[in-house]
Length: 191
Length: 433
Image (cartoon, rainbow over all chains, first blue to last red; front, side, top):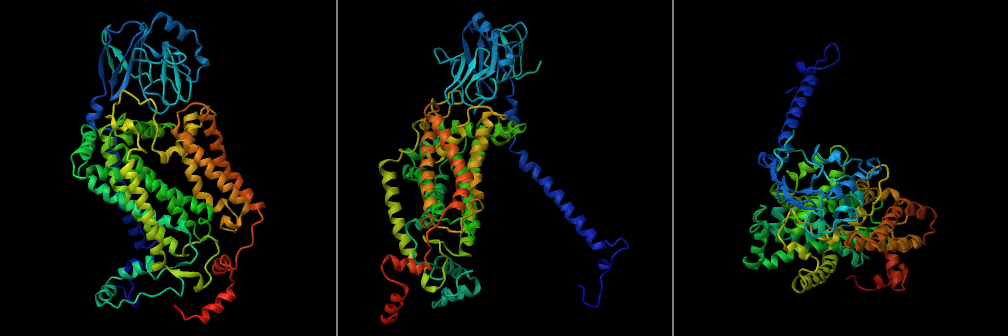
């Protein structure tokens, strides 16, 4: 312990005015601070999707039984996925609208695979607040534009599942997918 | 921290004296909610609601801890474990209904408590910190209630979680990442349910901690009162115990009676039948609504239907959060030096307009998203913000307030047709208590 008479070496200022004790304080606190920050990383990342959740990242869908005009609802990453076989009339309706006039400008070609424009594959999750839109099931309300209709807050999607009316900001999301054959699609896989 | 005439703790019981000398906990309680806390003598029944909120939190913690002994936070069995509580666990139905309705009663009490503060200007200097901490408690309550409602894993639980966590995806650039991080997946599932349970168990104790700060901050200047005039001397106050313990006790009895009526005769009146259907990620209920206590904010969220620079969805989310964050600035927005609306004729009118406005918002928030409710909630949302940002500063600058009583005692005696000098005369003539 320092008394009034004694001066510890650390109290003596160096030539640049920085005491040895100042340096030790800054070094110790910085080191502890970096350590504390490093501990926060696992505490935060533990909340991200775990390996088993990510392992369900791709799903194969057999589309052979879907007739033109029909749609099926299946599951991809624990969320609903719509696979819709468009009729020529629905394709024509979607193509008749200039993409630039839309809230989220995309053409049907942008949203389907080349040569497979009749297969519209989208997430069944409304881009507003995440409800499942109606329209994939037989006899469900397809909204004013013949695509999908979200009953929660009244968003209408057209036959290319593009937002046309209501509060949703974006078109229904088109996930990554690859045609493994003419009748099997792997959703979640990148080409 | 208290008035100089506050009674000092002087235990006569040797055990209490022994404890107090070593750990002055009895003294702390005595000074906080005992005879050692002098309180204005004129508090009306609206001052019961702070204590009632404490009672409601206690009910929630006690019933919640025992429910957690039977509940399983796993998406596969959560719904069944709740039904197990309802059907098989001894008195399980009573505990669960008490917990579910207790949440509603907690919010009723807290909303009245908040509006009491707005009417009597309790948020003004020197009690700003009391108000700010109260708002923190309110935010924590909303988070806790939301996560609690997810736990039964019924349809409303699931879709409520989907919609509310979906709010975060509206944040530009990082929204989706935050959304996935909050849920621990791409949609509400086991990971989300588990962490909601963990936090739902934790937050009530955080609330209890902030309540301690809330009361601590309150006891620095002491309680406000219906006149808004500060305490001047000893005759303006009475000791908290027995005067207000008795008055609060009466309030608690009324509260418990109403709670029991709800619990035993209409336990599901405030719930949604859809939540008795197990969660189904592939089918949205036709009409998703949050619990009633979120309706005013839900109405503000849905009031934005047009993109204007930012997407409508982001506006809705910003407005909903702003509606609460705005209240944090209230002590500095309302510049009127007079606290109580009793002496603010113009403010009093606008206060009631705000009450009606919030009721309209609440009604619209519970109604389907169609006309005329969309239009109504748009108008009511505009008024809500205008009330705080335009009306309050304007009223404060032009209002001619009524003359304030010289003291709390004068105000009390004027009600009974006497004056301070008369009272002094009678007090001197009559033997003291």
